[in-house]
Length: 84
Image (cartoon, rainbow, N blue to C red; front, side):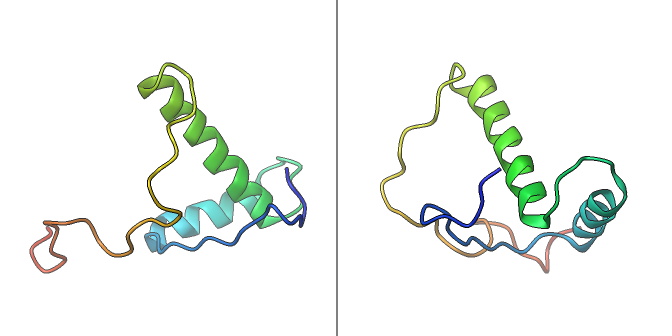
C-alpha cells in the first residue's frame, strides 16, 4: 500500500450507511494486517478496479478519461424521491 507520497491524492464520496458500517466493522474485526483505514480502502478500490479491467477491458487499464475530475452528483435520471 502507498504511504503519504506526493502521488497520493485525496478523494471523497458518499456511500450508503449500511455499506459504510459493514466496511468499518470488517476493517476493525478482520485479521487483514492493514494498519490504516486508507490502506483498506485503497486495497478495495484497487481490487475492484482490477476486476473491472479484467472483465471489461481484456485485463488492461482503461484509457485516461478526458478530464481530471468526474462529474459530481447523482446519476442522471435517478430521482431520490422516486426511488423505491
